[in-house]
Image (cartoon, rainbow, N blue to C red; front, side, top):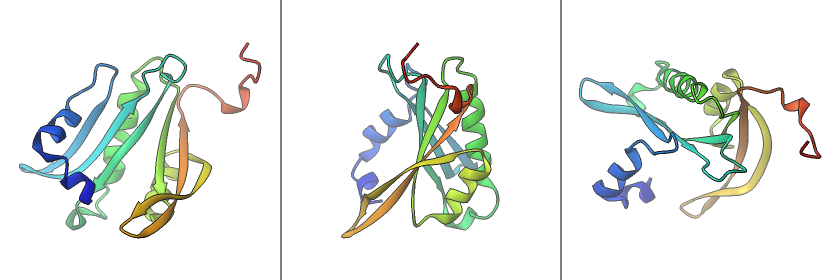
Amino acid sequence: MEEHQEFGVARTAERLRRGENGDFVLGAFDREELVGTVGFHRENRPKTQHKGMIWGVYVAPAYRGRGLARALMIAAIERVRGYADVRQINIVVAATQAAAERLYRALGFEAFALEREGLRVAEEFVDQHWMVLHLQSDPRNHSLTGS
């Protein structure tokens, strides 16, 4: 939380602008109040531009339990499905966020790695689960030779 407070308005506005490579941020509003967010960043290097990353999934405490995170995630996934050449979406979830991980699994994400102490919150280290949603291919049909 403290790292986001250090951004300031200008840097936050820059992050929210739609990127040329398909980056975006979606928000959920109650009237004019922003109560939820989800962001997407697409890789832009030629060898990795077939994938992107969901980030910034957040729902204000007073609005949790109403399906907002699910709705935001579905909207983000559907938008990314419109990118013909994006084949997978990655997401990272703290091991302490069981409800978030359940939501991501329910949406089709699969865990593929555990990063020990991948996140530092104050003086505490938290493990992170890396997850992937394959959009256009069966991940079992990959080639190790690149052909």
